[in-house]
Length: 572
Image (cartoon, rainbow, N blue to C red; front, top):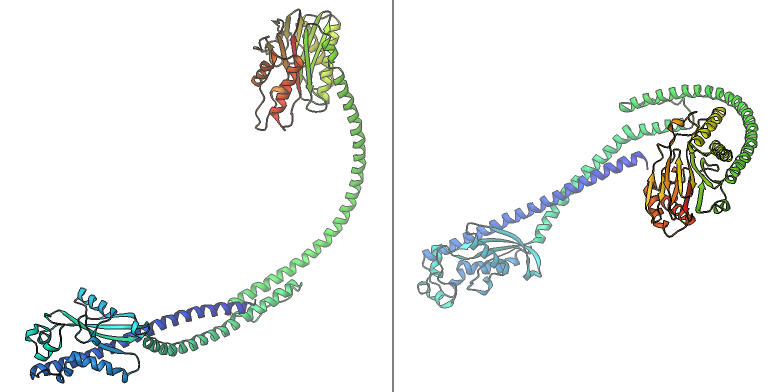
């Protein structure tokens, strides 16, 4: 939709709303004026009828005219009734008047429901002189009318015909049985004037049509004047601006605007400055684009050469990855191969042993071993810092050192661990590695268990399921971190009866986390061990622990190697 159409539509709507409001107000004013005019007319009619009543009353009273069948027709109340019956023959507007009462002497003067309500209003409000209100005239099929009512109060001269019956004129006394014993100030009746609403509406409509015609012509003149002003000062300049913008959109930055006045002159000046600067920038941009194209060509050639080199390096990396994968696979297999086999564990008399190891990566850094030599059983458990290839190599190194020292008859636990530490330390120096490990070694013979070396707590489980937690912090030092750790070494001896045992583990088990990042913990491990110890063998206890750990962590990723060793004494 064009701007001119929108502006004219908006202005037209505003004018239409204003015109409607003005005409609505005008019609209400016209109707109110018509009602006031009819009220004035009714007041004049009432004044005429009251003057007529008063004059005839004074004539009759002053001349002592005797009432008879003929003279009765000249009584004011009686005469007004006859005049009201004759009036419609001279005026067909529907305008009517009548003397009415709630105690009439003549049936035609009987007050209807609306007039009775008016009489009650004047009795309740004796100071009021006029009642003007709309009503539905049942005598005219419910047509809407206006009632103009004025009260008729009993005055002194009225008492001759409406006071004491015995003092009234003979003919009146004998003719009427009602409307006696009134006193001065009593409400005798109403002068009721009824005006049809159609008359009011007709007068209001005629007045409204004349005013509306003048207003319509005035509003149309305003609209056409606005149309000319908008076209000259808004739409024509906007059309030129539109042409200018179209030229710019088509790439013509030399287009200029001129011939404007006022605010549009400022806009055209800004437009011309904009197109001039855009034209300059376009030329600069074209020059830069040409330079960029040359650089892109040169850079594309460089990237092609670099891509060729990357492809060559990727091929080399793939070969290297295959080689390293094969080496890792061999190391992993070696690590699994040196773990104690089930038949070795079963061959150790007097002990029920179950072991478990699960590395976080393909190659773990945890260590455990069970070696039986010359009637003694050597048990070791440790945790190399980190995990992966280097940690796996350290684990293999420790396993080999333990077996070598055992084969060479080294039995003293502290000497055993001190010599093993020096060997590992020297190898770490040669490898230029910062790896080290916690390591606890246990020697078992005939129900006696000797501990040395620093690692996690050792859980000593009695045959009734009670658990003693042995802290190893003072039994050693990190292996491979210092050349000499003899000053840190200590021993601990534990008696195991039949049914007693131990549970060894690495921190990968107790520090396993659930979805809320809460650790499994030593306390929960003790609860599971105590629950199953008295009714289960070592293998069943080990499976119960691992199952509980897996249930606890849910779908969380295992972040560290998990190692578990369960040992239970079964006989002498």
